[in-house]
Image 1 (cartoon, chains in turn blue, red):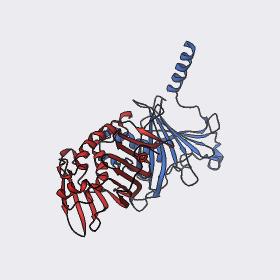
Image 2 (cartoon, rainbow over the protein chains, first blue to last red):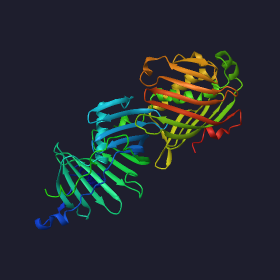
Image 3 (tube, each protein chain N blue to C red):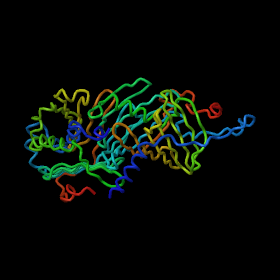
Image 4 (tube, one colour):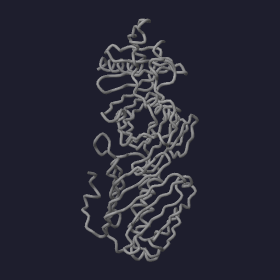
Length: 237
Length: 210
């Protein structure tokens, strides 16, 4: 019995201490760089979009509740507007970030500015190309393609392409501890059909998001450059 | 985060249950008349389409559902899509279920307890004391349709709801629509159809989630 406890403890310890995965870098020949420059996985929005998801929140595998989430995003300006409502249509939280945070409506228990800020950051992590610099491109031990960004705060964001139809976006603190793990399992119609977000914060939780509706929002939000990473420009590091 | 998720406020439940009460209003020419008529309604059932209007939405978000009521205190308020949820209320208390992982899961948050409290207030309305609820000031207006306006009187609803407008078909006094105005840029409109009064409803409707 003791050995089983020890094993469980060791596994939990290993999981909790999971740090940045090792990347096998892509080797580029300077003279052929332009031709073989690898393209980073880019599961991010290319134009303003509105998405409506059913969001299921879980803590320790147990469902804590389900809401409807509406997200409006402009990748060129990084503007984000989002709302969460009950199945009955009551809006519990509506917030904008342009980039300053503006709480339009926040009912208890969603009336915390920190909660709204974290939610906006999660949305940006899912839908927008990371800010910062690409530090490494290559592949993981299992062959998955990966690009690693270093953010302005010193943290890291890994964007991973797993064939045939899944992406992962993982955020790490500057220390290397993981903070968010996101899995996109897309359908033929939409990249954001199924999203799973696992968070390690003061309390750990996960969100499972299932798409209900999506539509371009070009006419409502000013289009600019499309916000997508230009892989060629970022190829050299 | 754990405690921040899905705990419907008492206000939300109040609003929800106001919808359920609509059939009680449907036969009222005035509040005294409402009280007299309340004894005659044994059951009500209807379909509804809910349109959610918000600044963030270019077009309304559409939900569909149905509700059932049987005197004196059995209620079923159910959304069929896009997110299935069921509120059951009766002698056994109040329970809310929501679709999660392909099955209906009971919502055990504090919001359900709050719903029980609200239902206590609702009981007054069920006995025809609709205009006696201190939470709302009710106004009746006759026109092409009969319009009942409910204005919150309590300060704790400030910023959450401005008013509720209930439109009744004058000829039949059947509920036509409910409009909940939450603020300048947000409203919820519920259009009712297939309203049936005093048609037998199986008890299982108020007991079984599926």
